[in-house]
Image 1 (spheres, protein in one colour):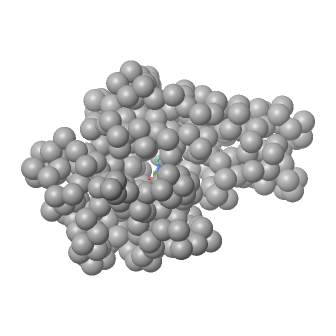
Image 2 (cartoon, helix red, strand yellow):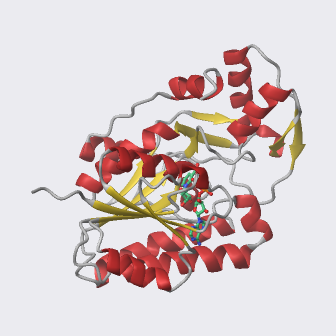
Length: 305
Ligand SMILES: NC(=O)c1ccc[n+]([C@@H]2O[C@H](COP(=O)([O-])OP(=O)(O)OC[C@H]3O[C@@H](n4cnc5c(N)ncnc54)[C@H](O)[C@@H]3O)[C@@H](O)[C@H]2O)c1
C-alpha cells in the first residue's frame, strides 16, 4: 500500500505558507504545521485537516517534535518578516529568526526519513541589485530582517556540507515580493487595495521610487512542490514583473479606473532596487508559473478574491 508523504511546514499559517499548507492538504499529504501565531498568521485556516502545533520554532522542544514526526519533507518558512519592525527591533528579529533557523537545521540533521528540506529565503539577501542577481552571486543584506534571512542561507550550506542526512537534500527559495489574499495589510499591494476600497490616503516610502519585482501568491505552492520533487540548490523565484511603487499605483489606477491618494514616509537605508534572474529554476526544473502578474492582480483587485 502506498503511504502518503509527510511534510512539516514551519510558519504554515502565514500569508504565503497558508496557501502552501492548503495545497499539500488538498494533494492528500500528511501536513504538520508549526506556527506561533505572531504577525501575519491566519489561525482561521486550522480546521482539523492537518496536524497543528502552536509553538515557537525558537523553543528547543521543536527539535524533538520534528525528529519524532519523521517527515519526508520539511519547509522552514517561519520568520519575523517585516523590515520596518526589524529596524525598530533588531535584537528580537535577529535572535528569533536565527535561533529558529538553527533549531530546524539541528532537527533535520538527525532525520533519516528526510527526502528534501527547503529553507525559505528572500531577494533581500542580495542587497541593492544593480543588475538581475543570480543565485551564486555574493549576498549582501542591508537591513536586520535581510541579515537574519541571509544567516539561514549560510547555515544551509554549512549543514548540507557537514551532515550526511542533509547532503544534497537541501534547497533554498528566494522569492521576489509576493502578493495576494491574506497578505499583511501594511504591505504595499494590500495598502493600494485598501485605498481603492476606502479612498483613504496611504503611506509610500522614499517618494515611491523603490523598485521591486512582484509575483502572485498562487504561483508559490506548485513551485515549492516542484523544488521538493527535483531541487537541491538555491532558486530565485520571479517573473521579472518589476515596478517602482509609483508605477504600481499607476497600474492599479489603470486597472480599476480610480484615483489613489498617497503621503510620503522615509525609510532609512532602504534598498532601492531588487531584481533577480530566475533562469535556474526555469531551465533546470522546468518551472512554469500558473498566473501572470496581470492575471494575479486582476484576481486580487477586481474579483475581490
Ligand atoms: N512576503 C514576501 O513577499 C516574501 C518574499 C520573500 C521571502 N519571504 C519569506 O517567506 C516566508 C513567509 O513570509 P510571509 O510574508 O508569508 O510572512 P508572514 O509574516 O505572513 O508569515 C510568517 C508566519 O510565521 C510565523 N512565525 C513567525 N515567527 C515564528 C516563530 N518563531 N515560530 C513559529 N512561527 C513563527 C507567524 O506566526 C506567521 O504565521 C518568510 O520566511 C519570509 O522571509 C516572503
